[in-house]
Length: 472
Image 1 (tube, rainbow, N blue to C red):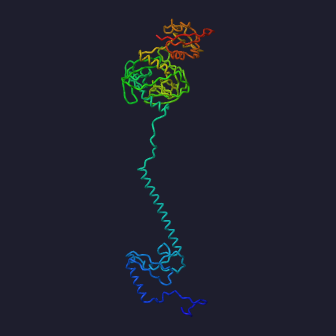
Image 2: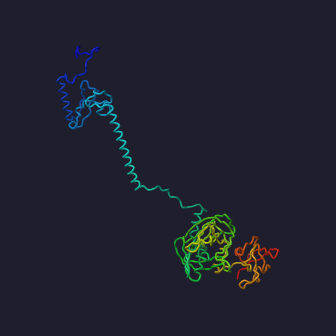
Image 3: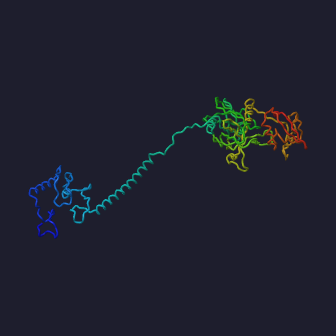
């Protein structure tokens, strides 16, 4: 630029700017060298030669990027190969430019931000879509191949004295009894009292097959055996049957006279035919007079029963009632029922939490007698009772009943001086409530036991002792 073209107030500075219209002042040799370099770029030369950018370029002087062979033919990279970058992004400048200052490849900051923002949105959408698809694929794979978590295998052993432990030890000795008689059939329970095949049950379980019929015993191991009646007693509602098997596990008898109300108990049997059923509860009462076989005859069953709230249902009859040592303290025999409620299957109601068992002291003595002789003895005092009496105690009849005198000549009552019309108000110190309770109290004793009775005659009372005799 000459002096006449110098701007006002300006200083002399060498100009580095060159108008596009001005011809290049480069020597011919340099032009040939540039042409040769451009040709080499077009040919995809394997090595790049650094060369200075055109004078006045806004870019810093850096080596041009490498060009893959053949790339120059399909792009306009040769137009920008001489423009180095100052940023990690190829083809972009990190410095902001004013409009018109960039070359043909210059990109503004606003455009750059828009492109970056768009790229971020696309990445987020792709990530979300990929996550949903991946989760779906994992879910399908997991549902097809993954199983639910399982707790590690534990031990089936239970502490000694627990219900589970007692049940495991006692069940092999408890059996299911199926009876098919001439007119009826039924199911009950029983338990082994001797290892050579003797089984104790209720008389009313096997009564239907007493004359003709078949008794089948099913053990917990699945084996089935036919059984025959060894002996039975209707008065105690007990019977002993036998199967042809040896080395059977036996249940031991406990002492029922030592149990108290509130003791925990376990009932085992086949309620409603469901064999090997175990229920538990407590002793809810003692000395309950129960007559499973009905009253009003000399052959009626009279039980001085243990009451329990352990669930007992039809089919439990004859099964054991166990204490927490696994010993038999009773033989399940009867249940209470609400009047009018009957099971449509067999005419019996289900458990309402009031069940009754024959005390083991009585059951053991009767079982021994039935095994030894085929029949059992039961004690009597030798009197006939007036069932119409109302008031305290029980009254000895004043006249004969079915040809039997009120006081049996030579019997315990006769020897103790009792007379017709006397009122018995206590038995062994316990008040007598009614005829059934009095008979049950006597039959809870054994033949030969001495008992004490309090008698009221007119307005006087006295206490007498007598020794029980066996019934004829």
